[in-house]
Image (cartoon, rainbow, N blue to C red; front, top):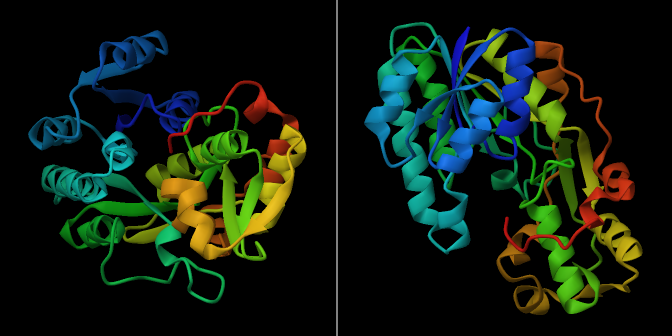
Length: 305
């Protein structure tokens, strides 16, 4: 299958692309810079130059493919404070890809997250939906494309997709905060729960979704269902030789910055239905085990997410 992949040179793309190639697919990867293009070429991937601000170019690449995996998101704009702009750009891209694939029966795999459902009060399952919200609108748009003759599906990622490939996600950011502040902190009693998934497990799920997910499927890339956030802070503190302490909610923004709301999120999530549907089973190390391997602490972590 000829597969067009946005975000092909990013953290997740750097695992999804080899997963596709090993399974015999021909990959066309989106590259917005010379550096990304060179990296994809070196990996034997055909390069499509462009970015998320060129929906027409993305639509043309999608029309020439047998399937599409949409991973890219304007994380740089989000980090700069323009989250609304990044969300709007993502929705425009989904609409452009949908227009290109309408009526073809080809697969389109989009990306969403479990974090938008934080505070549900129970374990999130794939059947849970929201009417609107940041990134939720794009998720719903992808699922709705099933009614337009596209075998569309969406993968909900956990707050942290972890591995040695992760250099700019929430875990590197938390490590940077701990190093800078001198304490590995959590908010309140730290009992709020995060799900997590290993990068390679997530990559395999994207491939399976491309190959066989039914139209309109919502899928969960979840390995660890619910890790108390305090446990994450404890491992970070131990690895850095720093004290671990709870802070009041009123202190969270000053301590964690843009991470303040995320570190307080209670987001337990299940992937049982996804595993049953596609025969996917996470096999990589869990987040706590991965942190214990030490690769996150080999060099100063990025403060970005």
